[in-house]
Amino acid sequence: MYVPKESQPKQGGGTVGKARDGEKGGKRKIVAQNKKARHDYAIIDTYEAGIVLSGTEVKSLREGRTSLTDGFVQIDGGEAWLHNAHIPEYHQGTWTNHSVRRKRKLLLHREEIDKLESKTQETGHTIVPLALYFKDGRAKAEIALARGKKEYDKRQTLREKQDRRESDRAIAAAKRKQRGE
Image (tube, rainbow, N blue to C red; front, side, top):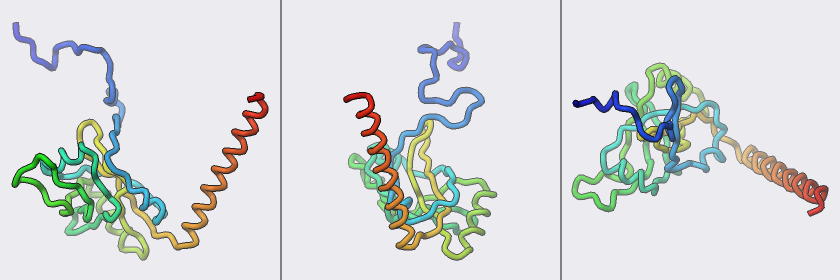
């Protein structure tokens, strides 16, 4: 007797890497991050967007040699586009390989696009990509509405980070000394 695959009991019994029923999200496999963007910009708001990719781009992304350093997002004709993201050619691809720095369409809700477009009209605001990752087998981009930092803001952020690191080290050393190590 034939039983459809959907109604067959699953083996293994768990939901490894997947979201349970009623939960949003799932496991993220990060492919590329833009650490420079977090240093150069003050992040105001973040969004998750799907990306329209060709087959060789997906295969190349899975190899994980992607760079977002020069990337930026532009709203053009009511659509969001990711520019200058470097996804290298797939090494086993043929003449159907993609161009390395082509613009790629981002999939966002209409309200999100309208909000981003109105915010970028304000002075000093821009949209930058923060990360590329796979979520439940689909390529996603984390983009952020950001405002550029001045040089003294960058120095202040680095100083705070260094002070936090030094205080954490001092606390850890005190705890070790207290335990008698």
